[in-house]
Amino acid sequence: MSEIICVTNRALCRDDFFRRVEEIAQSCVKGVILREKDLTEEEYTALAKEAQKACGDKLIIHTHINTAIKLGIKKIHMPITALENMHIDRAYFDEIGASCHSVKEAEKAQRMGCTYITAGHIFATDCKRGLPPRGTGFLKEVCGAVSIPVYAIGGISIENMQLVKEAGAKGACVMSGGMVCENAIKYFEDLGR
Image (cartoon, rainbow, N blue to C red; front, side):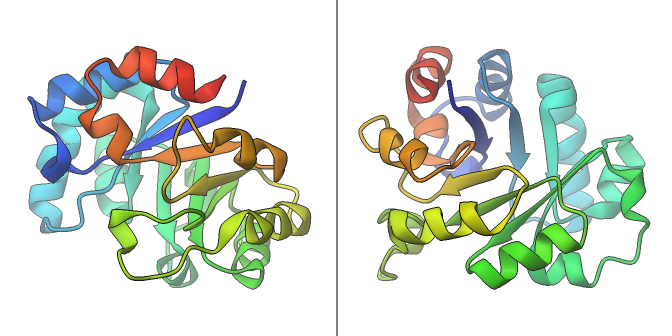
């Protein structure tokens, strides 16, 4: 069974966002990255506080280190450039993830103490419309270059999940599927098989 991390996007959610996040957290997902890039830090913190009630310890804060510390959340996910400029002791966090788009970035993330990385985008996705996907060959290279878990991101579906596994990834990150599916628990179980 592959591990799955859900990445949020309120704009894609067709029903109550917090109800959706709670349902996702009740599924087999490893974590829920609260990736709401359109918010100020104050707005993000308010959203994270409510998401924390819905997700519990599965909540992963995206970029906003001060929010994580304020809410006592020990999991964070960062763009690699933000991780490079992080001025807080990384030992505070139990899990640190980084978004990587090259083998070099993946190696750097591992050296900087990441406990996992996301590599992408692997398949075509609306989130990166117009940008060609990096493909499973790229994913295989990244998986071979680091010893920490790698999660594929970008265009992941039940139909192509086997290709992600064959490339050596620990699992995958999904956004659209988790935000729009009618039954998140079943969707993530099917995806992780």
